[in-house]
Image (cartoon, rainbow, N blue to C red):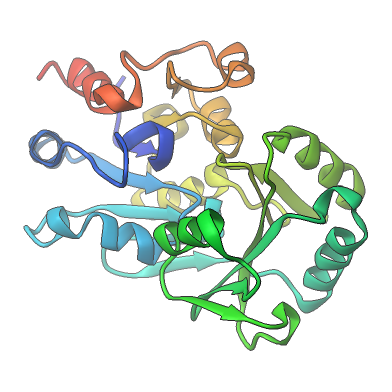
Length: 272
């Protein structure tokens, strides 16, 4: 069996902390991947632009990284955008109306990820606003989200508690197959278009590079990684993941994210 594509989630998985990664160690792995005609994909809830900025120190040296951004709503190679799925205006209205009528949403924050920018209410302040500016590129604070003139890839709700799976279940029950809701850590729930998830995004790159499912290795730690960990035989959950993930995914990475668990597992596979 030969792996041709390695995809990793970022926060809680690939990144150690504060948007950092072991650059030298990662670049040595990328050298090995290139020699073996293997690709590395950053698969994240973050936008592609944010991921490109994150890896700029490595990319600037000529290394190639591909992207599944916004939880699968946008897919790009190191050279070009291949795919994107947007929410329709009707879907946006439905989701925001649901949120307005939900008693549990009184204190949450709504973030809309668009092609041009990221939009958040100008009422967002403090730690939540700081988090938005850290994880999203080109953030604009607006008075009314529905007046934004942009194509929206996803809506993110950030609740001031950890009851993410409860909200995910409720959204899935209400919207069924029309939309896809998933938890992505930090108390947030992402709402995407129908059939949009990281596994679907990876399939776009598989088709582009002619890679089979059995030739894909994935790493993740949260609910938005579940589809890409379950789909592939070589799907690894991080030891630091929440219990519900550890119960569902059998294969474990060799170490936690803060101890370079993804890199260690790849090195073990490649016998580096």
